Length: 160
Image (cartoon, rainbow, N blue to C red; front, side, top):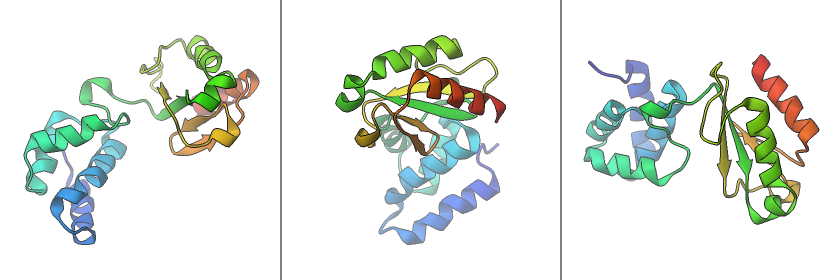
């Protein structure tokens, strides 16, 4: 039984003509699967490999190179909250901010809240140094985060 739906397979196959070879579709395929399933199970790795004429180990190597893909035993919450720990963010209180999020959400970095709404993580840089300390919520930057703003973000994410 296939873990990838027909719709997901069609989306992956639609990328193939856009690239010079099938192997180049590995990263977009991983993103599509994670967006749909909130993780990339081992069976999905095998199915992607088969679709792209690759060994499963090649897909797995790509997946594990990047910190944002999760295997099935580490399923993501509905929202992904990254706290940046770059030098700029660190100098402006990122470690304290990460601690604040941990305390308020009752999770450690890499964990998901009990209600499944928020996965808290940290990143070495999210590319928004001008707004340090900053966070990334799913794909959106939030800049100049204070503990008060962090509490507002948490409230917003818990309602979603």
